[in-house]
Length: 288
Image 1: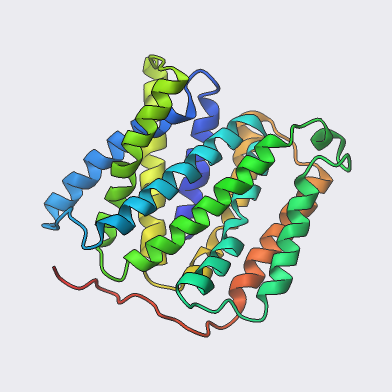
Image 2: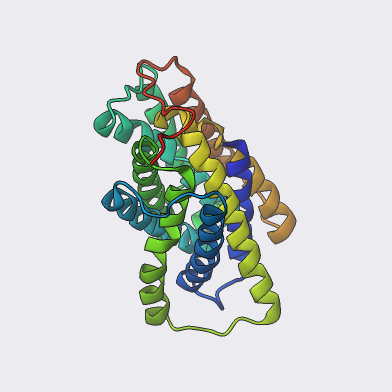
């Protein structure tokens, strides 16, 4: 999960570096095509079938992941990288709620204070005027970032459920397979642009980072309860803040720092208790 956090932060930084010339949907489309080709090769090399036992669930997972990524990239392009990453980190709290609802994985007694901490952290990121730098920012990127976190949480719960019957590689493959047609429609609607050679390099870089993040994420979610598997993801906040500072010269204000600390504390608190119902997937998935 720690490796997943690192590669997802790198992916976000790469998407931000492309600026507004290439739309988020076009980035997701190229990423999806490259990742699908690689995963098909990997499945064939390992002698595994690309056909899932529950295709409807994996299509749902792919659609949720697509909308989550779309919100995330849109949010990243319109606000500081550290803030966008912080908003995305609310998803473990959402995951705990959804896992308790759909998978019967009880979040524990610490969930309520964790939820309140996360809510207070998000409130600090909203441009209320507490931070002069944040007060001038629009509200829409924050709301879209939170929506992306909710989509991510829902997608993670479906991954957790799918890992009981599907190979990890098959789950990862069906994310781009589902995302490609959705991203194609979105890219055509926004207008296609022809990437330069340098931009193609960044697109390949984003695809590779996203694929590695997805592989590590799926492996982690297959082995521990969904509400706790995302416990390592606050590391993405650290990676995002460092990359934002190094690549984009984005300072972190005191209020933003306090809000981030509250969100990280909420995620750690939500997953620190002893699991009441493990329900973990087996170490090896059943043969076909």
